Length: 93
Image (tube, rainbow, N blue to C red; front, side):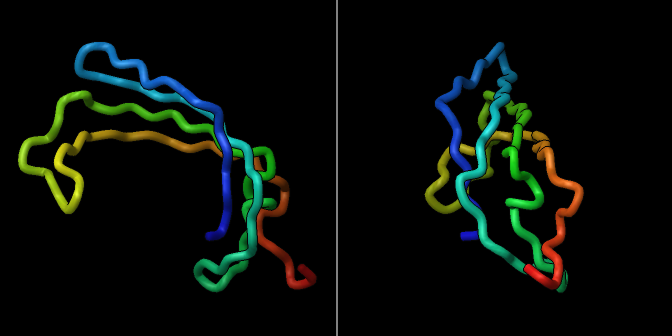
């Protein structure tokens, strides 16, 4: 595991066929990881946590079942992180 985030309980309001979810999570812990030859750490990428904005359909997609998931829904969203000025871990770290 490269990072652990924590959040408070939240609600998923659903209005007709559309639902939405917006919440923030705090960074509890993180460790270095390598991606495309560069070393990163969420303590540098998002030291103040992340915020989600998610939208989803409340109508199941017929025929999309896989594995243990017998009901599948479509969704889309974005995550925003407020990072530091240096998001790549330097050679001295």
